[in-house]
Length: 518
Image 1: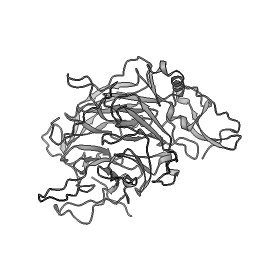
Image 2: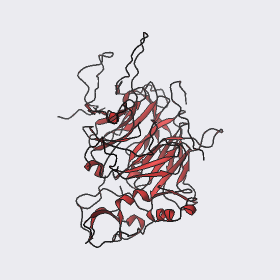
Image 3: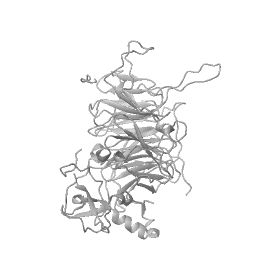
Image 4: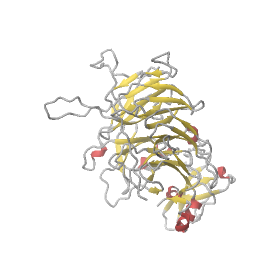
């Protein structure tokens, strides 16, 4: 059950005055940098229903062990340029072997091989060879630099666990594990804290818990009246998790209690806390026939790192975020169920940033929290093709970013922050299959701006094209990122400056073997 609420540097490596800027990277792989501390050490850190949406694929026509520091280099013209210094111990070089790389070039160095970095989601049926992936999630161990296991959930209700360890060209794909917890599309998948369980949210109105070791179902979580869109594990309690649905409900489950039927082989559990219409209801206007207002759907939820009992949620109607303390029910009980406690947001966003550009309010498709240099920030992807940045814990909108080619007019598109907290990845509904990477390492040090001048540059953004159709699901491991597309493929992107330079110097030849940023 829930706990009771409690009472209310930059190291100097060497003289960098005469360091040249045109240094090259002498490594085949550039790991994602960890966040530096003041002491210079890395921080640790389908029963098908009529209401269930079916997403149709739209195909096109055709924390790391390496030391990382920011070094300021003084140039003759008195300008100062920031370089990133990397210790490449993981690549086999001695710790004293270091290279300097401009920070802006790190995002551009991601490449993906056509042979060893592509995985296909095989279909269950004989009428098609592949099936579109809807969601993906790297294990917690992968985000800490361990074996990069990636769980990919598909339209047909299966989950493929892929080992995305870098391999040489034409090597066989490592054996994958396939789970089949649902017979309907899976819209979210999450690993628990020790990577032994997977929670899957599906269009069959249920969330199911599967054991990774035994590959069997362990629990079925009921309670939603519509598609379950998102799920999140409580980081402070291994048996607690929360789901959000298209029905506007937030449901909290405790895997230790509420077994609805002791006779069932697979335990079915009900929610210990249910919050209905968590983001309000749609207003009905006009007409003589009275229509019951529909609740606004929940699109994403997350547990902030510093407040294990808190929960942040986003909705499909507007850009307002809610913060919930699940230990503190309201003093007022619900009108329909006087005996049940009622829950209200502890606080919410004071304004809707999606209306700042003169348009009507638009929903949020995905939210992600920052860490390291972006700690204290929440990033949200709007259905209006804009990236919104909120402060935490006040949930105050700070600024917005976008890209001319970014399209997110779909609630299937997701957002993910890198483990180091410096970069942000976003999918896109563009038919060209575009993946976007944003540099958010300075997002917390930039003043709020909503009506930015037309000539004011946005933060560094890189675009990747290597798949067909919409790219919806994305996630990071310690030194790679995965993108899932409607063409039934999962592509892994890895930083490799040497290979990137080869690609741009000879694009006609290299395009048959690699994809890279444009």
